[in-house]
Length: 153
Image 1 (cartoon, rainbow, N blue to C red):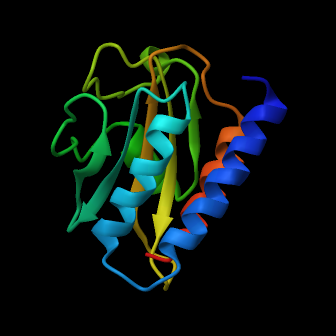
Image 2 (cartoon, rainbow, N blue to C red):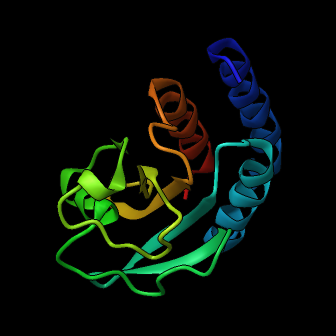
């Protein structure tokens, strides 16, 4: 998919999700809806899901794809780096990321987006893996950040 197609797809997904998420509702339900819409519509997504920050642990769910690590190591990983930095992270090659947590050896690249509550605190991350190297770019970052902003978790 070229850049223009990818951007258009993210825009259409955002419109669809805006309608689905506009009511106040359960956070887990909103996360499940985002994953259910995103995962099948983006061909470069191998694993799509959330890790929720519970006390200081990153706990899996909801997600689609292969079985996830249920609780991530609290000291390492792309998801923890996203929480600590409070910014989106694109990893072109997960093997080159120091401290990467290999939940599935088929994962080759990754993008992680912080999820904030209404007070601006990080409460989760959206984690997307691809089975291809260099699968994510700024279009993915912008598209996913817009989608997460719609969720008002």
